[in-house]
Image 1: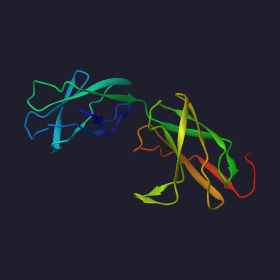
Image 2: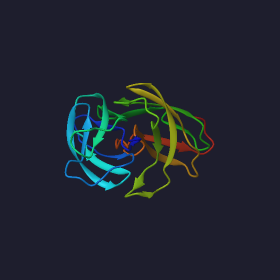
Image 3: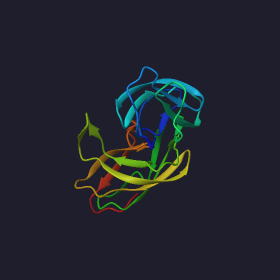
Amino acid sequence: MSEVKVSHSEGEASATVTITGSGFTLSKKLLCRFGWTTVAASFIDATRVSCVTPKASVGSAEVRVTTNGADYSASSAEFSFAEGVQVTGVEPRSGTSAGGVTVTVTGSGFVDTADLACRFGTTDAGRDTGASMAAATYESATQLTCMSPAASTAGSVAVEVTVNGDDFTEGGVQYRNEIGRAHV
């Protein structure tokens, strides 16, 4: 097993995760184990299975897979159960549309992961509506920073955060891009 596609689950909510590895087979005894909690798995192909995470407290768990119900994979991946991620503010609230402004994002549930990022703008049903991604620097569970990207037009955009690269907050806190103005 080499990878867990979704690296965290928020709070007590369950999430469907895809586990990538090799040698998976279709079996009635195909299972995923998060720490010591076992859940049913669904066969996708010889290199992927999916399973729904169990409800758990905030923290990390090793994930392993078995195809026979007894012998679990020697390799494992780490999965994090995190509190719900929320954005409550940005500072400064506006900046030049040329980008490059360090924006401090406040909120809760931030986790220091390789996929931590800010999204400036929104997507609509999977259709890009001008959203731009920016890498984020973890400061604490309640604060991170990211550089505002360049924007082709002036106007307000929502700033959202992801800790896993797939799921974003939906708070709608606004950052305003202004033509020819320094940040305020």
